[in-house]
Amino acid sequence: MNHSIQNHLPKNLSFIVNPIKWYLVRNMPLVLTDMHTKGKFDYLVNIPIFLFSVISFIFLMGIASYNRLFADDYCYLLQLRSRGLFNSIIDSYQYLNGRWLSHLINFLLYSTNEFFLRAAPLLFPFLAIAIGFILYPVFRKSREKIFSLISISFFLTLLVILISPEFFLTTIWTLHVAILVGGLTCTLMASGLFIRLMVKEIPNQVQWKFMLLILALLSTSFHEGIALLALYLYMSFFLLEIKAGKISKLPTATYLIVGAILGIVSVFLASSNINRAVILGSSPEISKFFTSIGLLLLKYIFFLAGEYLADWRGLAIPLLSLFSGLVFSRLSRPFQTFMPNHSFRKLAPFIFSLPFLLSFMVILPFTFVSGYFPLRTFFVIGFILTLGNFVLGLWIGQFEWTKKISPKVIYAIWLCTFLFTSISSTLRLNNYLYQIKEYAKEFDARETLIQNAVNQKLDYVKVPKFNHLLDVEWVSDIDNKEVDCNLKNSDTYPIKLLLTENPPNCCFSRYYGITLFLEGSYR
Image (cartoon, rainbow, N blue to C red; front, top):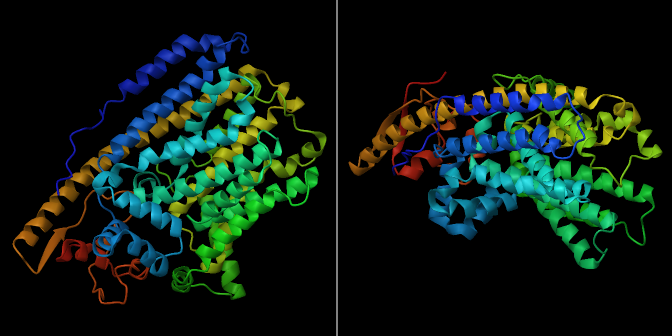
């Protein structure tokens, strides 16, 4: 199959630098004037973040257009080809992992022929809509603020993408993006519906409670890390509902908790997940438990320090989210009807650190599987830090002590953080576009070798290693040792092969119908 694509973005960044220069020259004088003048807020904040989001999304589409088959793609397509849609979902649930809803979504995407390869960026608007659904009650009092809501929803989604390590797996690889976006979207929708029921925006009727249960079930059926996040949120809602005294017979949040538990049980107690835990080295030994905690904490600190990113520091984006929330709170004044009361202010020291505490609580249970927490799962942590710090900034903006700070100072700090993050991120996206274009050329050349060998009915073919690897290791190219491809369910249970030191995985060869060997080694 021919994957060559003609469309590509220009290497010259002047089409980005020039608009930024124009914006600063034209609008920076406004910073020195009255910040509350009607319409100026749109120019000073909404327009920049909206333009940056649009430009970055164009970059993402350009990068995704050069995507190719990767790792588990071969296994999923092989199953779909040999077993059909329904049986593939059942087999994956039994032998791969318990994420039954992610299997359903992924196999539906794989059924779209090659569209799934480039579909990942098109899934992120669903997450942006869900973020907007959560934030809408804050902005709903003014139709003029809808543009602010749209801008910040897509901007926060983009920041979650940019803070995530292993960019390919969390942004371009459709198989994993569908899992992340699906789980987080359902979690946000369930939370937003609960909030609307609590503020009596919609009637507290049985159909909405049933919808809460279903959304909670779905939110915990995509991904283990997201399932833990959802459960923590729903338990917090339950406690807040009791404290607020808004209880008739049964707390509304009970439906969220019941749905979440049903989803978690269906995922965590699946035979495939139990086997997966054994393979990963699940151990109840106290010494290993504390060792795993230490390793996870170190990994978390490295993430915050930007150790897993090549060109900018990890804390820049959470800080930008915090300042963005503060700017929106001070200049757009979204909280006209909701103000933090005295009892909430007493919890301020705890709430300030809540995004970091909650994100680490998601990591902590992974100590029971020997601290196995892959870098791609830090997308969930980045989501918590990004959205959590934005909401925190909105809340802080209502405090009297922040109102004493000049809006000019707040905007200047936000603008510096925004420019640093946007420029460095744009450079990163441009570099990644070049990298994946070169990778696609090498992939297509290997594809031609394989197809020629298949047409010639050869017994095997040697393919060259990649010179332009992406930001993850190509699991089929790590070493050239022997692999037992006659293992039971080896084509539907690749985790056993992927966790050893002897890929290529069997799906790679079986997909093409010819034995593949690698010329050279990466080690």
